[in-house]
Image 1 (cartoon, rainbow, N blue to C red):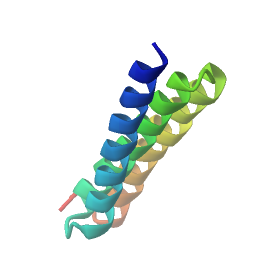
Image 2 (cartoon, rainbow, N blue to C red):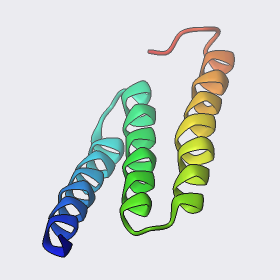
Image 3 (tube, one colour):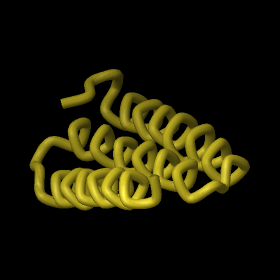
Image 4 (cartoon, rainbow, N blue to C red):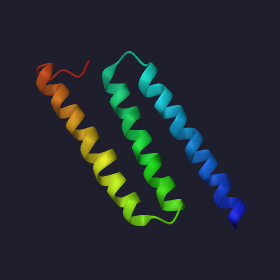
Length: 84
């Protein structure tokens, strides 16, 4: 069972690194915000696999949910409601 968890953690970590690369390399800010949210969501799943459910819940709620919403809200206020 341990090798299955290790393999799942490796896949999730690779996906998080890929999403982070997308977040820093795209030209559209809305895609960068979504990719950053995906990194945070994948990190919360990784924390759950590492048996830290309290950290996973906090990361999912604050890091992925609230921060992504706040970025889009501020982006809409700055650009007058346009995302790109």
